[in-house]
Image (cartoon, rainbow, N blue to C red; front, side):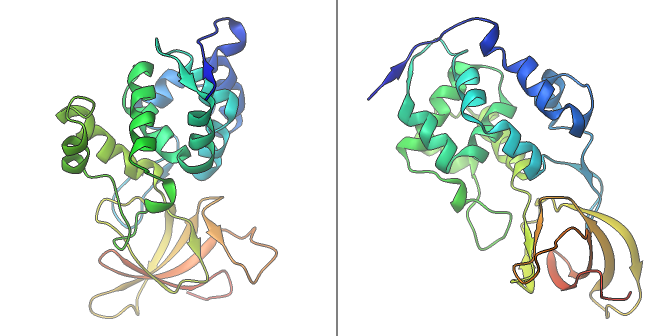
Length: 241
């Protein structure tokens, strides 16, 4: 096991580094503001009211080896290379969610060690009701000191800003958690959905749509049928609404 100490110096200043990376996406705001509000420049307004979220394109820019080490280097504790590898391979979203809720990087290091100890993985978390999500009572029961009532509540709320789904043509119907944020901007609603559902034409955020049957997935509009939090994918741009 290789332990990494906490080097200091300008090369480890994550603020300048990430600000340079994400400037084209979110403008010249500081990383401090991004950590505080979860990136208010990117917003969904469908199916519920306006909700801010972190898109996949931004998360991929944040979850880099250098970024992870720069954040963990701010801790007063040493960490091992295996933790960095675990975050890169299995827990990039957990790392992002945890980093967003608390500026204490020693706590962040302890949180990531906690997730590794109890075998938490991004692949287990989803906005769909059939999958797992972070539950504050479960976290507190495993480690009440690490997961105080405030932190447990914050991470369970923040997860929805990060667990924004990728919509695939391989799946016809989705059933999402009530708090799930979907990567849609409503273009228009039309008649014909039925008594308990609506038909909508929406724009989908880049990085949140895949069509394995089509090499060109550059189009960004979809036709959907919505019943409560259940979403049925009708088609891509060829569907006339």
